Length: 103
Image (cartoon, rainbow, N blue to C red; front, side):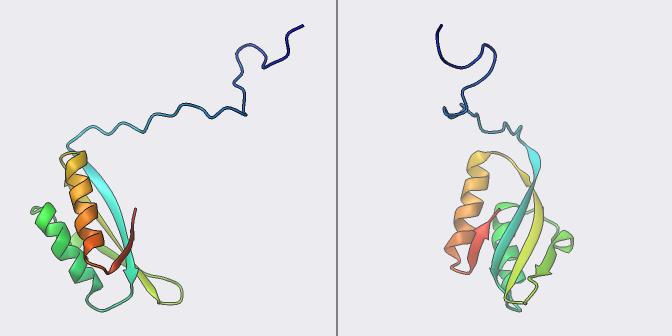
């Protein structure tokens, strides 16, 4: 008798081939930008966002302080036009030197 995985079941020792989720552009795209808490951090993030999404409404931006107040997250929704658009925005946010993470 042949040893192996029963028919219809995947061998869990082998990684599953996963495809990245498909995004249909243009779309509303949520971002959470995390950096050190500072009075001007949200404005810094907003400046970069507006360069890439001129129609961004800054009044929709949400700023959340971490429990101990050391970090801030700035949450925004932009109208993304494609993967390159998002990549360029991520790169510019990180290039500020103030952004620790973009999710």
